[in-house]
Amino acid sequence: MTALRHVQDSDYYVVPMATSDDFEEWRGHARLLLMADVPSDRVAWTEPGGSAGDLFSLGDCRLPAPDGEVPQPRVSKRFMDIARIVLLNSDITRFSLLYRVLWRLQTKPRLIEDMADPDIRAMADMARAVRRDIHKMRAFLRFRMVEEESGAEHYVAWFEPYHHILRHNSGFFTRRFANMRWSILTPRGSLHWDGEILREGPPATRADAPGGDPAEELWRSYYASIFNPARLKVGAMLKEMPRKYWKNMPEAQLIPDLIAGAQAREAAMVKKGALDMGERPDTLEAIGQAIHACARCPIGEMHNTAVMGEGPRDAAGGFSGLMIVGEQPGDQEDLQGRPFVGPAGHLLDNCLVEAGIDRSAAYVTNAVKHFKYAQRGKRRLHETPTAREIDTCRWWVESERKIVQPKLVLAMGASAARAMLGRTVSVAKARGQALPLGDGSELWVTVHPSYLLRLDGEARVQQEAFFRNDLSAVAKRLAEMSVSAGL
Ligand code: URA
Image (cartoon, rainbow, N blue to C red):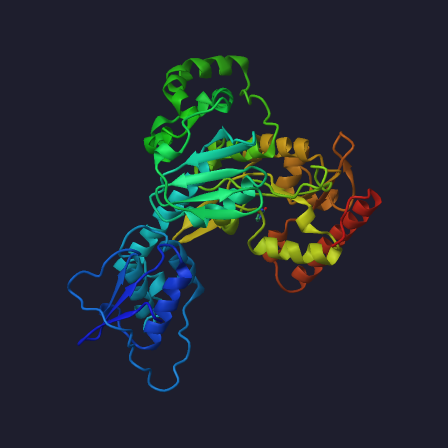
């Protein structure tokens, strides 16, 4: 551990961090300090480029040798999960806070559950602020098109995060805008994606980013058409979309006029008797952008990530022919911004492999795009979307289906089946058979993997076997339709 410095003539250590956001770096230092039994009040941590001040005369690293064989320190997954997020906070005390909690956990393993403890509360507050920043960046970052000298289109966005979230969010943007060439410029660093390789660059200034492009006019008129005056709550809107972000969002320039005209539009809509859903977006990228701003139902107002469907295009630019639809993102999906990456996703993956269906070739999405939950202490407990919420979100999943054009849709659970059919069906009655969707494609219905996770004992074994049977029937049908299902 060459980076660690020992303050001569005392047992004080200074850890100059080389990175602001690399959890593994902090973890490596913390592990060695813990194994050398260095109490948290004997360690100071400094930001990259920061100085330890004149107080310390810095010497070489000389950690006290551990007494005999020291086992690797162990700590709960819960601490690790939250610590990874806290580390991204820009508060300079985060490194020492995390080490202090880690130190205290060695003698009080349940400390992490004690929300009355000031350190644990501070961690929770820092994590909340980081999650909010992650969400804001995903929701409010806007690209502007610039033409490269070669004539190729390059999309550039300027964003000012409060915290060190740029690298953390890179996967989200490379997946979401996989087929575009883009750059994200921020005062904390920049990212550049050429469709294959992601590169990191130095911090940028606002002047490095373009100010506007012709596509913004289109985006503004699209936003005006989806803006729903019946749902307008100005206070909530400002809380969700603080003015700080407005200057980078072309559509935000419309907000004052839209608010002013909202009452008149609402009256007109009520007279018309229907909500105006506007033009259907005609690319998955446009849907991905638009669902972030969607607050057509109360779930969209819960400040969490809109999770878009995902799936690869084939060489001809089409999709494999299989679309898998779940209910709504869960806790993990909300955090990672991808469908079926949590426990239900792992079970699904295993069962698909056994049935010979290649998930990585399918388009995987959800009936509802936001995670609906009830907060219970620190836990976010899944809540089933209402029929009305499913019907509202149906607009998006239908738009995805029109673009993906699957030959076979596998709907898992009653919410997904309703989203596909527009009416409630009994999963028990509908499963195991093809239901026509009216455009030549077929719907197959089965249970949701989360339902299986809630069962145990014999019931779990039996229901999992039925689920596997349903998937095998789908694999067989895909083979008949000559849609690639094999691994
Ligand atoms: N359950 C779902 O329905 N979808 C997900 O993406 C995850 C869990």
